Amino acid sequence: MNTTRPRVPGCREHVRASRLRSFALPWLTAALLATTSAAPPAAAQIPGAAAPPGEATADPARESRWSFLFNLYGWIPEMQGTVKTGDITADIDIGFDQVFDLLGDGKALAGAGHFEVVYDRKYSFFLDAFGGTARPSSNVTLGLRRDVSATADLTMNYTFFEFGGAYRVFDYHEGDSRPILVDVLAGGRLMYFYEAVCLEGQGPLGIQRNVSTSTTWVDPFVGGRFVVPVFDDLGILFRADIGGFDVGSKLAWNLLSGLTYRLPWNPFGATTSIVLAYKAIDFDQTSDKGNIVVDLNMRGPAVGMAFAF
Image (cartoon, rainbow, N blue to C red; front, side):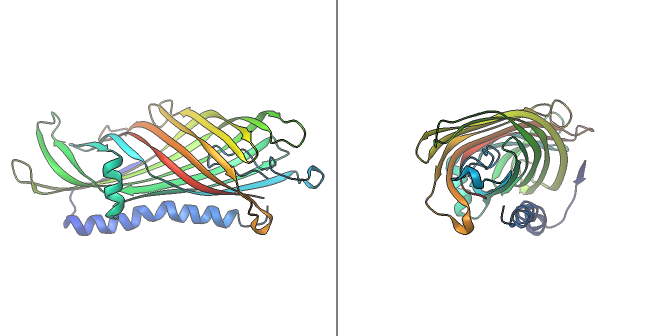
């Protein structure tokens, strides 16, 4: 589903209003996840790569068959690719140097929340919402043949809402050591992307164009994840999935890898961990009419806190 609004007067006013509307969605979703997970629900790992709770329970005799995990994390992604809106095509190339410039100017931000419920240490259901905004300047081309070029101010807002289930296929530990855990997973990812392009008297012909577009699609995915303890409270985590399959995106993949460290802090009886990871997601989606194309690769470091009950 997509909508295109080809002519909007007042570029700056338009971008400001659209930014408030579009960027509110990920944070409202994260707040909903926080509310959902507030009930007192036993491993703390990473959003989307989380080893389901149950791993960190000190006394197996007291372990419930139900366990819960809630994570909050920030993400600093580079962005490369192409975004097309009607006859305007923007080449996106935001490296780390530009990302930090945008952060300093208040023109970039990304974050997420993750909630997971596990039954009997085998069956999991998870929800994950992440989103952000970036407002760079970019080279754009106009026309079907892309024969006119200019520099434009872009606004890109994105929200990805993930849902799915996991099944534990391997759970091994010796004595009181932390277990090695391997899960297979499947689910869907609801993708929302908004773009506004503002050209005000730029380009060789003094072209003025204000265009905004939003598009929504769902990508099914399959994948796996594992957590391997290194020593004491330090562990390695990894998650990967692939999807799209021409249902939404032509092809989409998602990768997350990093370290988790269990903290000596147990608020309300929760096991807490700090997570340092690297996250990457890639997708290539074209609308049914072909007038909207979002072909992006986003990747960068993430840091978060996990709470397991």
